[in-house]
Length: 184
Image (tube, rainbow, N blue to C red):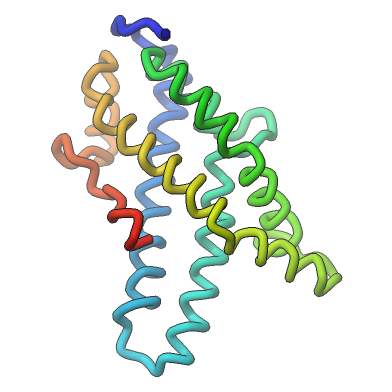
């Protein structure tokens, strides 16, 4: 079991967490646009479906940026245990659980989302892989843990003040709190 003591994270980790929270706020705004297009937009249904599919593709590319394996880039599954050491076991379990989906997400980003393969089959394979229930469940688990991290920010010395200085904390309830899993 990870220690429950309050520790002050390294300033580089605090800075990386601020970057994560900023990107997550932007990600959630894009999520809200997708949800609106999918369910409420006052446009013809066929246009709404096409727009929602395009925004969903952008969401998946953005989502991958939280799990980047390239050195000197953001990977929240490596960052979170340094900022929230008392949740290290939960984070490690999540990392193992969603590893296959992260591989699919990376392939999608590299073959379809941010880069474009010349092969239609690569696009179709990458897109189909993201539409399965395994990806939805993995992302629901990530979002649930992200909410727990936001709820724990007050336990990390100096973190709330740093987030507040960047306008990233609106009270103690995350502005980007994800909807219930049935709404995703």
